[in-house]
Length: 304
Length: 250
Image 1 (spheres, chains in turn red, brown):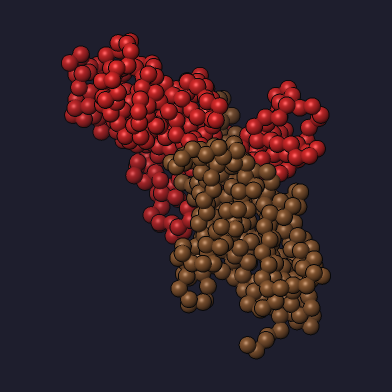
Image 2 (cartoon, chains in turn orange, purple):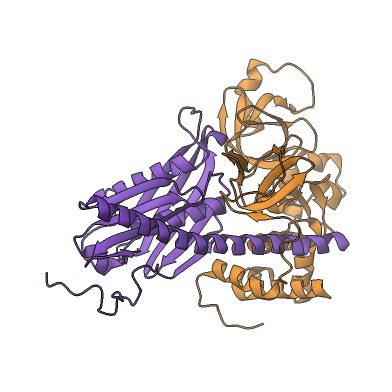
C-alpha cells in the first residue's frame, strides 16, 4: 500500500475527472440528452411529463437529463436532483420538529414531510383513538433529531409528503450508522430492507438516506428478557468485528456515491469484497488514493 | 491616468485576444458533494465558485411559489486592490446579489416548488473583470447541477466600447477605463434579455453595437457551457449504468 499522502486537496474534482479514462465512450445509449431550454425531438400530440414545458411551438426541457418516452408521455429525468416522492416509497428521515399532532420530517425533499400522530403505530400495538395524552407524549415516541424509517402514504396537491409508520418494519432507528447519498442512485425496487451476506442489514431509503444496522433478532438468539432492553444488552454484547464491517459497508456506500455508481446490495458488496480482498483496513478506506484504486479494480473486474 | 493603449495597432487587446473573442472558459460541475449544485467557473483569470442549495424547506410563512435567496461575496485575496471588501454589507456585492436574484427569479420555474426556497452562494476567488457575468454563468450551471427546473439556460457576457472599437468579455484593465460597458444575461435559446447592466452613458448607436457584440459573446459562452454540461451529465449516466448492469448480472 503506498504511503504517500495525496497533496491535492480537491479530491472530489479528481475523482470525477479520472473517471473519464476508465469509462468506455459507449455513453449515450438511445435516449436523447437535453439541457434546460433544449428542444425535445418529438412527434405531435405528445403528453408532456415532468421536466418539460411548451414554449410557443417548441417542446423544451427544464432540467438536464435523458429524455424518457413511454407511449405518448415524454418526460426528462434529471440526473441529479432533490428527492421527489412517490406513494409507496420507503424513506429514512430525521425528525425536524414536533408540532401539534404531527411530526415534521426531513426527507431530503423540497419540503419537510409530515408524519401525523394518527399515522403511527402506538407502542403496545393497540389500535385505538389518539387521545390528548398521546399528543402530550409525542416526544416519547419520536423526538427531535430521531431517525425513523417510514413509507410515503400520500402526496398532497402542492407536493407535501405524508408519511406513515403503520407497520412493524417502520419506526424509530437506533444503534446504527446513517449516511446520505444522491437520491437518484437508489433505484425503486420491491425491497428496500436488505440483509447483506456479511451479516449487516441496511435500509436503502428511496430518498437517498441509508441506514446501516445489525439486526439483533437475526444476529443473536436472544431470550425474551434481553429483547425488552435491546440497547443496554447490545452495547455489552456488540461484537467488534460486526461493528467494523458495518463501518466498512458505510464506507463502501460512500465510495459508490462519490463515483456516482448505482447503489444496490450487489454493488455495495462488490466494493466491500474488493476492500477485504486487498486487506484494506477500514480506517484507510476513504483515503483518496485508495478509493481511486478500489474504483479502478472494481471497474476492471467488470470488464472481464 | 496615463492611458495605455488598449488595442494594439495590429488590433489585439492587452491579453492578446481579438476584439470579438471571449476568454478561455473552464467549468467544473458538482465539485462540492454536500451541496445540491455547485460550479467552479473560470473565465480567463476570473474565477467564481457558485453553490446552490435547495429547493428546501422554507421556515417562513407559506408562499405559493418558491423563494430565492442570493449571497455574493468577493474573497479578500481576489484582487490586487487593498480596499476592504468581501463583506456581505458591501454595497457593490449587495447590488450584484440582488440583480442575480432577480435574473433567476424570472427563469426558474418557482411555481413547481411552493413553500420552498433556493439558496445561492457566490464566491469570487479571483477578480479579473467580468465578475458579474462569470457569477451568472456559474449560478446557471450550478442550477442545472442541482436539477432545479428552469425555462432556459441563462448565459451572460460583457461588452465595452473603447478606442473606437467594440470588444467583448472585458478583463480588469479594460474595465477600469471610463467608457460605455454593458453586461447582459440572456436566455440561451430564445435570446430574450434577462438582465442588462450599463456603466456610463452611451449613444444609441454605440449601445446597439454593444448589445449585438454582447449577445454574440453570450452565444460563444453558451457553446462552451452547454458542451461541458453534456459531457459531465453523460459521464454520470454512464457511470451509474455501468455498474448497475453488472449488479444485475451477478
